[in-house]
Length: 462
Image 1 (cartoon, helix red, strand yellow):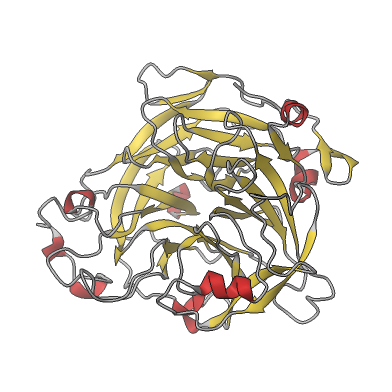
Image 2 (cartoon, rainbow, N blue to C red; image 1 turned 180 degrees about the vertical axis):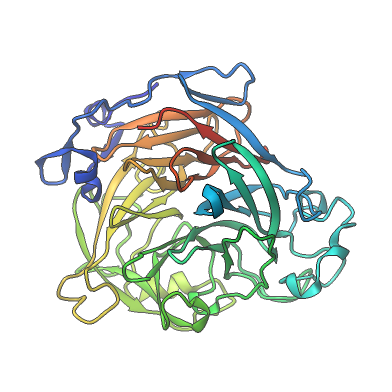
């Protein structure tokens, strides 16, 4: 059941304030600092209707199609890997969409989950130099990315292929303004045992219409930790990163050369001004309230390649703010939005908004710093439960992918802070992942992760 922001403020089901970054686009007017009065229907698409096929419930006049399944044959002779996760789209030739998709395969994932067949019989087709970690035994690291070329006019897949191979637990990531995808390893391990390479890095994958497997190069200056998601400010080219740990940090990377992340740079962590080592999780006490902007500064980090997975601990000791499992992150409407999956007193999740400084990462930033604001904190699982991946829609709402127990929903959030249920997984309790719109705005792509499905949703978008 959908409940509006006004309802859950009345019942203390959740807090929602802010979203000033989307205000003018959405046609909302201010009523008081930090709040918005919507001028549109807070439930824009209507109630969910039961899917007769038992896969995905959607509002009236919306439809979906399954465009890819785990173990499908791909155009390059490999198989679609399992556990599809974070995704983004890029414009292709002749109006086509290039969709790049992560696969969150773990060290203990069996060969049947990967691209090379249940007995690794297809592995011989892969040039060794294109596999980041071949392992020390018979099984390589099976994570990576696949790329799908999709015709949104005909609503059909034209081709799909393996685009990054030999990494581990590729959870989320983020798109860049120069048409590439940053794929993140949500795992830290050192060479030895089953694997021959260090893990805990991010990798860049170009968006290409041409069948192309990238040579895997870890972007080590972006840090070694449980990477989750990435967002890039197109004006400054600063790269922001979340960390999926219960006591994680928010990072930013200042590249030495814009659009060349492999040329190195500086890794920093977010500090709330005047509140060093702030615990934003609100678990034991409410240290941060929705709608209150906080000025921030950024501190340099050292020993960023430590194999001990302790970067966040040392950063916190030096003043960085602590967050509750930073996951999905997206740049939109001059802000960076990110989810903290189990933040809040009920541990049901928080959505944050960071507004960069006009001098982000440059001289004079301290005089006009960026600001951080808690936008939503859920206290009712019926409204929002463990938001994970997220995206900003073409009309300015957020779409949140739930990853909690029980039923899983795609939850929309208007610029006024109203929440609505846009879709429901009708067939399983698999989390949603990777929600992202095609460049032409006609199609919403999303994964049902443990089901191994990628779906394309169309309908009367606003």
